[in-house]
Every structure is written in C-alpha cells, then in structure tokens.
Length: 493
Image (cartoon, rainbow, N blue to C red; front, side, top):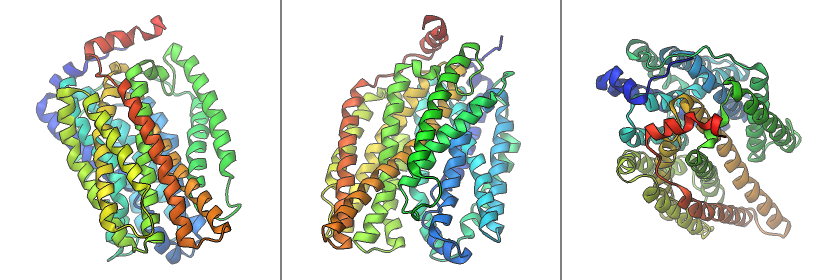
C-alpha cells in the first residue's frame, strides 16, 4: 500500500522558503512554455512567404502543437504519479528548450515542424505539473492566491501571445520568436535543476498502452477536428473535420469505458473518479465554457478588426493587450478574495459581466471605434478573471491528494479541447453567415460583419446559460473532509 503525505504535512516539510522559490520558478517556466501555444498565429503569413509553403501547410505549425498537447496532457497524470517532481520538471523544460533551439535553427518547414512537436511535448507537462505541485505544497487556506497566479499562466499567456508576436515581428524576423525565448527557457531549466526538490512519493504505476492509444485518437481527433473547422484551409486538404470529430467522439467513449474498468484496480491512465466530486464536475463544466469564450474571442476579434475595420496586425495586437494585462493584474486579487469569501461571490458576478459584454459585442458593426473594442475586451477579461481562479481552485481543492495529478490533467485536457471547440464554433458560425450574405449580394465587409454579429450572439447565449449555472457552485469542503469522503468514493459508489 502506497503511503501518501497530506498537503499540510508536505508544506511544513519543504518549508516556507522552498515554497516561495519553487512555485514562482514553476510559474515563470509555465508562462514561457504556454506563451508559445498562440505565438505562431501572427507569424504564419511571413513564415509562409519565407519558407515558400501554402497557408494550409503553415497551419500545421499550430495544429501539430495543439495535437501533441491534446495527446500528452492525459498521460501527465500517470507521469506525476510515477516520477519525482524534479525529474518531471527537468524533462519538460529540456524538451521545451530543445524544441525551441530546433525551431530557431530550422532550415526548412520539416525541421521547424519537428521542433514545434518537441516544444509541445514539454509544454503539455508543465501546467499539470504546476497545479499538482501547488496542491501538494500550499495549505488549503492559501491556495486561492497561488491559483490566481496559475490563472495568469492559463489565460493571460495565450492572450498576450499574438500581441508579443506582433511586436517582435515588427522589428525582427520569425526566428526570433524562438531565439528570444530560448535563453529564458534555459535559465529556467538551470534554476530548476539547482533548486527544485522532490515533494511527492512516486508510486509503482504502470502505463496502460491501449489507454494511451485511445487517448491519442480521442483527444487528438477532437482537437484536430475542431481546429480544422475553425480554419480557412484549402478545400479537400487533410482529414475531413467531421471524420476527425467522429473518430474522436467514438474513441473517447471507448477511452472512458476502459478507464472506468481500470480504475477499479487503480490502473487507469486518467482516473475519472475526479468527476465523483460534484464541485469538480460543475466547476470544470464552467471552465470549459469560459475557455471556449476566451479562445473564441481571441480568434474572432483580430479577424473583425483587420477584415472589417481595416486595422493592421500591430494595432490589433496592441488593442487586445490591455485586456490580457487586466486579467493578469486581477488574478492575484481574486485569489485572495477567494480565500476569504469562497467561489460563488466571485464566479457569479464574473459570469454576469461576461454575458453582458458578449451581448454588447453583438452591436459591433462596420463603424465601431477601436475604443469600444478595447473597453469591451477589458471588461470581458475582467469577468473571465473573476471566474478562472475560483473555479480551478474549488475544483481541484475538492479532490483527495491521490487524485490531484489526474484532476490537473483533466483541467489541461479541457483547456485544449475547449480552446479548439470555441475557435471552431465562432469561426464556423461567422463563415456560414458571411457566405449566406455574399450569396444574397452583400459586399465582403458587410458579409463578414454580419457573420461576426451572429457569432457574438452565439457566445452571448452560451455565456447567459453559464451565468445561471454558477448558482450551482459551492465552497469546497475542508481538505480533511474532502480526503475522507473521496477515499470512500470507490466503496460508496
């Protein structure tokens, strides 16, 4: 029988100084690696010209990254159970640094794509690693403020990626998207190798190969399918999105069935008993909706500003920067408020703000000012900022320690699928409405404006439903009660 130490005991054992050093190091490292998930979008036109590749081929630099993330993240639950924290961190940062170096030196598209794949394999490990470490090292009454910092990594890093990319490309070529990140990644790797110590006791877990294969087809298929729906790819290029989504859905059902069987013997690749916590299930559902909104807006607003209003890439990136900064500044404050008041006083007003802003965005047309867009994006980011930290902290805090790593892996997987689905839903609706308006004789700008209007209506409707769902959110029970209750889950249910 494997011995598990309680979070409070672990926190006392490592000491406050270790906590202060390790968590900031993990936060900075995670921010750097997650930033790369969205940094390529703005660079693709220049990169396509430089390498002499088509738009649909260039999109694989983003699609392959997301696919690897979707495949690797579900496996991180096993990795964090099987290996020491220090081993996992060094592996993740080594892979990311190696991939960044390959991208920086890449002579052609094939090598660049290989570098992105290696980068993504390291990136996928970092967020579950960070969350699991916080849950093990930080006492329950202080988790809110630390999870607030994690919200910065999860939400702000992808949001500021396009802005940073635009600024770099304004003065340097695309290689420096990787060249400027590489020294930071290597510094993080070196500091981690020196200062990070092991805080958990690995178990003799075995990996279930059929589960890995099913997971790859399930989450990879869903992310690829949704991402393909959200692209203006060449007709007939690649696997049809509907087929990919269908394969993903079927294999996901098989994956869930196998995990339910294996978890009876504690051999599951991704232990789904995390969903036996009502708080976890409700919160993760709202996280999914929130990330759909965030990533949908990240992709839709730049299209609107450039294709409808005629702004350039740099102006678009700068216009979206204040919202990302506001979310980052708000996250630690929200974390402290969570520790004091619990989730619902923050989540419900946050969801209300998101819904109201989405309805406000349905008024955007061909005459909307950039000031109105910045204002709307700042308030939207504020509302999402009020939601992320309480939802993530409450969800993971409701689990017993033995399920921390699996809960963290579920959060990372949901983020990837929600991002792809949100992008696909917004773009698919916009494209369908715009095509219909073009057939009716409207000009291109008016057609796209109408398509974006309907896409925002879809987002506003979903956000309104999410607002009512927030009344189901409750404060997590105490760690002692959560641990006892969850430890009884298999027997009780």
